[in-house]
Image (cartoon, rainbow, N blue to C red; front, side, top):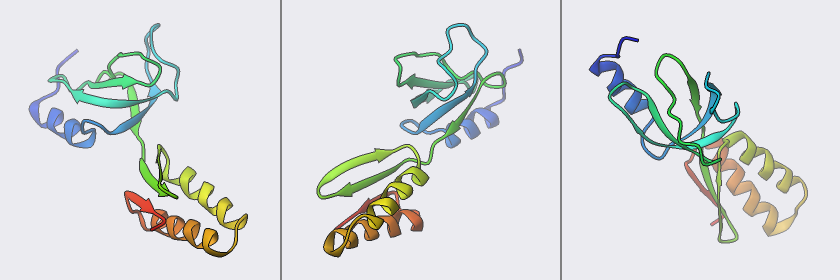
Length: 128
């Protein structure tokens, strides 16, 4: 296998910064986590492989040119003082849309504010 050049390594590091969340799409390894396993990026090495701390405890790297993962659209919501981290903006929006439908008054207003901020693309969506 030929190692990627510095430009490719830098591009992968920019696309997958430390702390971002990913989901495994493809990995051909007997020890591989199941497809769909989520994890947190802890770095990108000089071969452009993505170093991931998988939620199931695995530490296998996503090897550049061989394996695949996708970056998740992580969003944080704060409702009634409770913070939640969502790996999918769509899942969060669907949740708060259902909450709106099942509420009224000031509670409905809180959920509507969070839902609106989710749709607008904010990284942190609050009811305040």
